[in-house]
Length: 212
Image (cartoon, rainbow, N blue to C red):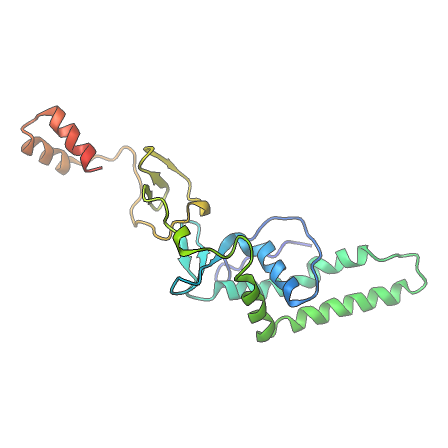
């Protein structure tokens, strides 16, 4: 069996590559499934205008088109393929009614998975996820480092003068349309500095540092 695969047109940007496991066949169990498989890709912040945010590979963006809802639907549709083999592995094959119990277990899991596709069950899964560890965040956790500047190809750490890959842990919610180019030149800016500082190297250096 395969892990739940993200449909990028309808779900979150990330699906966790984790060990398959059994969950309770309840609304709370569905919440645990959603958080386990897709929790790395979304956050819930009640103070935010859209509340749900998804990791798009570069920043935490508002979930404007229902990607969390799509992940919830994929989660329940994956239940039979992922969990029936695990449930059957726990049965005693030497029992007199093994085949009967096996068939009943398969039918029960499939029935639960089908019923979990209802709007009521999907809404319950999302509602319970709002308070889950790692999902619920305070608005102050976003954009907490004013020294980080997000570009299309990297994140700049202005204080340490470094750059690194886009990281969900940076909690950045915006991204510049520009790419960072460490060897880019700025002839117009250099000409301006030369003119106003009359070629004074020390003053030019000071102004460059002051302007960032």
